[in-house]
Image (cartoon, rainbow, N blue to C red; front, side, top):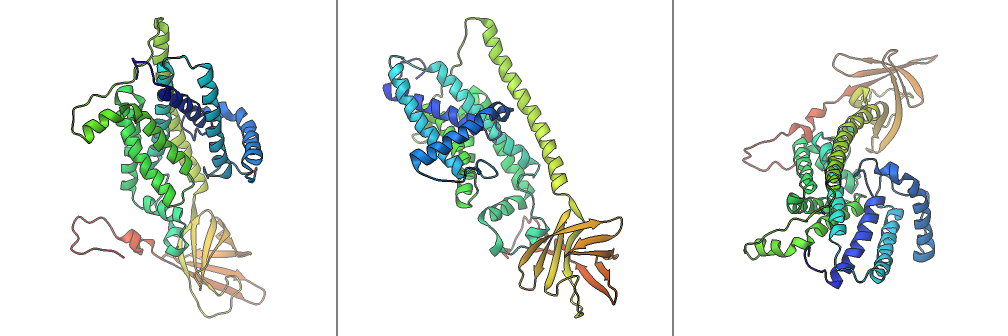
Length: 411
């Protein structure tokens, strides 16, 4: 394809791919290219208005304009913008094909499109791989999860708990995702694309079947990996399916007559990779700072059973069976029907007081970890004992890795 004139169908397909892929990457960066969100920020408000107009007047699909890309990447805005990019690519392909119908090939454009695509996939997967190495994307199940019955789990919550349980599994998956770095070099592009296609299939199916709202981006990673492999399909099939010898051709990079332009290309690549590396380190440090801030452990961290002493009490409802202090400022309660209630819990370790259930209570931590809550009224003093439980006795934490198992241990 590089040294020969392209067929009409190949040129049309390339024009469509060029417009659609670049549009998608520019507006669905998802943290891949450093600083891209700042560059594209002025364009996002008009794009939102244009997509909303397209949805209302062309697709006749109403949606809440206030909701766009957030923690979910599969909002109505995301799906409508995807259709918008497809329509834009079709119209752009028609116009481009009419105006540029005599061109023989697009070798230089193809190189730059594959380069941008390679870096987009690699940077995004490396982003996810690095945070998996530190077990910070899908954390291990905390106290609240341990107390949560299976029937309360959402499909996504179940998947996150499954993946988060094992640090070793996170490290392994993170390393495989970091292997997307093979895409950063032309000579290892095919190997990298085979890896990322396989990895993205796993991500994509998990997002589909566990209702994780990153379906569009996951599918894009798979489709873009396949796009990179398209020129190499025949030699790969010959080698892997037919058992015939085959040769993979490296995408040729453009060579400019002026040496400074060739040096500039190398300099730009080194600069981009250096910025990406700095971004990874700083992003990881910032992520851990945010996690330490927003997920700071409670001063009374633990799971406690509310002791029933048969006495009348008002400071703690009689139907409270257990209480979990996991993160600062928050607590969760399970009643006798095991229904969960989240509530605020402001703890002052200096004064040994806790604001809970609209009361400010004094507390004392006993040597065995139990807590005594006390509140004095004019006519009485109420005391409630919270008996500390042992999370390490939960089956999920107690069971360790075993090389030898005479019988399956399925609980």
